[in-house]
Image 1: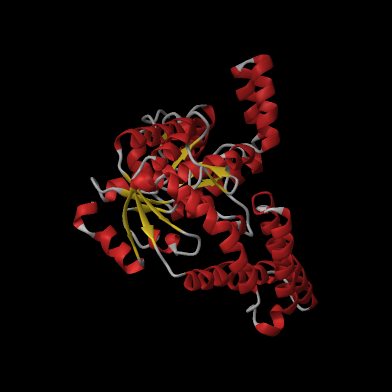
Image 2: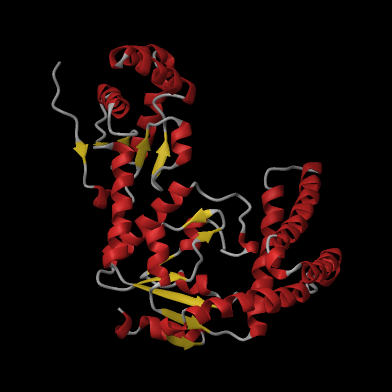
Length: 380
């Protein structure tokens, strides 16, 4: 029985702005290297199956590769994969599917779904075209868009402000990293491609929802942990005007203490104890305490080169003493090494960096003044 052509979609902007659910039918290894934030990996072929089909394609051509693919994914295995797609479509009727380049894998997946009575549009050009659209968008934005950089010393709650602004993009959230040596997450960072895609989509969405408004970004270096800003965006940020938030030193130390010590300790306990029962919970707590202490020490060692060997040794002694007594003094002693590190490392580094761009500072003030300035009509 002949059926009409199955739907093909290429309105990439609308798909991405709408956070359209997507079925990524590529192999898991491809998905892990980079995908779209709204995509779920429901592969047509496993990594091994894809590898075998790829070799066949190179050695014997497309027809032989298609034949092998059908022989590998058949019977109950084929039914399992169709059922997974069907279940996702039942929960996400607006979903689309894609493969690497919008070719055979997405076509076959779409055909099998149609045979099961389900019509799912496929993305023309696949992941390659979606990715290309986002890269081009970032380049275009860096040429035509307007940025405002929110700057301030460590502990001034810049990220908290960013997350309150409708016309801001949270770079640290996209990178799953808080930017400093002590900002490493417990669960790792996304792949570089995932990070870039997330930033591009967030920029796209902000621009669509708030046209003609300047986009606000937090002051970052070219790298956030192990993830790197697109070069054109890093260059654009370096050349953009800046707003500096000013917060008293004591208040900043309290913010850092709460975030990097108290909250991190709670998160570490939860991370290591989540799945345990009975004695396993006790073992998990012990591992968590060790992991927390190691996280603090490793974070300090990462800045040793700039801090200097002797000062690092002195601050490490304060840190180890705080770790030893944290159960007794409710983490209070951690303020000692945080104060020393902020005075000797973070503040001098910030002052040096801001001095190089002081001519780009357009406003300074405390938190409320900065929020008021950012919300004013003059900065839209």
